[in-house]
Length: 146
Image 1 (cartoon, rainbow, N blue to C red):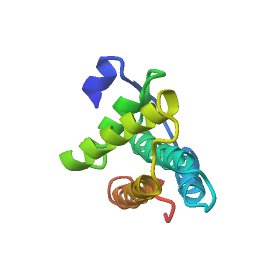
Image 2: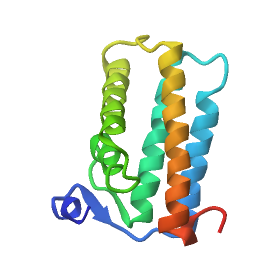
Image 3: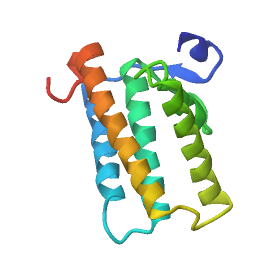
Image 4: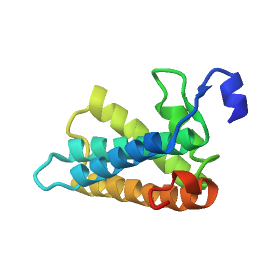
């Protein structure tokens, strides 16, 4: 990630426990909202995707970084390979989700099925769990249970 900062993709910043807890609360809020009945699948997908971004941003923040650009989704998601050490299969899946989200927002409204929205919520929940486990080991002082 140091290389990413040198390339201008990330900025070095100091985050404290309160900052991380706020990010974790937002991830949980988005997860809870994405699972509400009655929401259109497009919204559920986008909200769950936002939870994934929040989890990735929280991991970056725990390492002392934040995205340096407005169009940062790709870098934030890709950073999960270095923070939470997600595997290439998960990384590819997240990239497909990013593309689907972009298509749904900018090109093809109504393209998300209930199953895809539920899968996105499960991915977000899994990443949140991985983030909490990672924080407990790598940054125990930032873990909500500390």
